[in-house]
Length: 522
Image 1: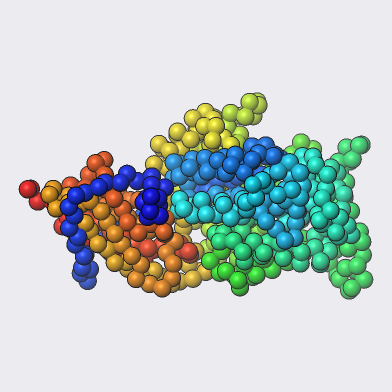
Image 2: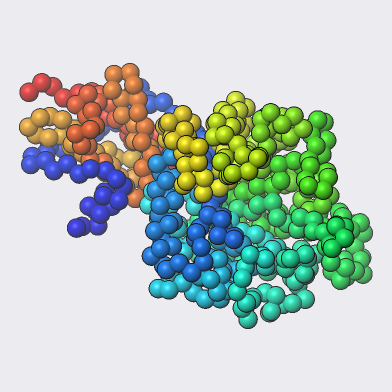
């Protein structure tokens, strides 16, 4: 089978073989009715690798098993009309990709430092398979966690805790890189930028782990993070901030430096952060943040001044983890979302995270699937909120409480483009050249072929067809430059076709349009 036919089969389209075909080059008049703009909405899902939450389902699977699981997840994303997956590639100073700096994760192979067999690069594979389907791949990093208690194998000799033990602190059951060490910040940036440079990812993603969440000692007292050596060096160097502000500034500096480094190297690669959903208790006024031991303040306890990152525009999308039900008065989903939107003076993307894993989790706190549908509708009700991210992939694969069925039928029934990021680049893709082939016998449209007329690669194609007054939309990956109609397509009734290009910044160009296409009676 030719590479072209393989590509068409991979796209899930049915080939139609016509014995006789005639082609029509489509001229582009200066003025004609344009199709409607496609839906713009970010529809993402986290795929967590830490503790094998989502992928791989367990350590030590064979390469083919790992790949099959990931393909099944990407295919489910396509079926649900999601347009992005956020894949955790660095859970704890380890790697689910071929890193020159850190060992292979034991969540992947069952043994830290052991490569998958047969050897392959999971991140390269994930990027290729996601892009083949027209889905963005965001690489998710934990910047400071150095070892997780669910990691069961011995720590390998090339792990940072062995190579640079002075950077690493024991905190509760975890090992943690000290954000107060300037060398740690440089190291974290080097690790992340290595991925940005070598892989065709669409975004870098950080979650809510910066300084660690509070751990308690045997007497249930909260332990302070053991960063006295780096704190003392800061003071001796002339530092004037108090310890809490110094810790926050360590994180602020990393976020700002990371954003600048990404934009210098690959300006189309987005930076997204998904902090704890409440900046501080009392913001907004009715809000309280409660954990098992009392009130939690992310600003004060994990030193995450997430509002500052948004206000200063040190990111491209902001995904506060709004992991509470709509009815929770003190952690109200709509009230919190509205507050975050008011902080967004620079117009960055706001895509709240949703606790989809709470559906059917067999606990007294389990949610019905409709809660997530209501939260999506709530997000859509706010100007400036343009998408949602589901935590995590497992409930969508398991279809808990029919959540996948409901999303497919009610929330995501039509495809959507990721919202554009015009602050990154204002260039517009050129209008493509379009050719329409008809069956010589029936006169029906059998095939569309198009090609880019610009010099830059196309990320996606938007194909829109009009029958009567009704437009329908398909979003196709950039490698695909033809579409073959089959018996299920109402091609005999199509009277207008439009093809437009979308670039890596999400900007859509002017469409090439074919009008007056209804076949005459034979």
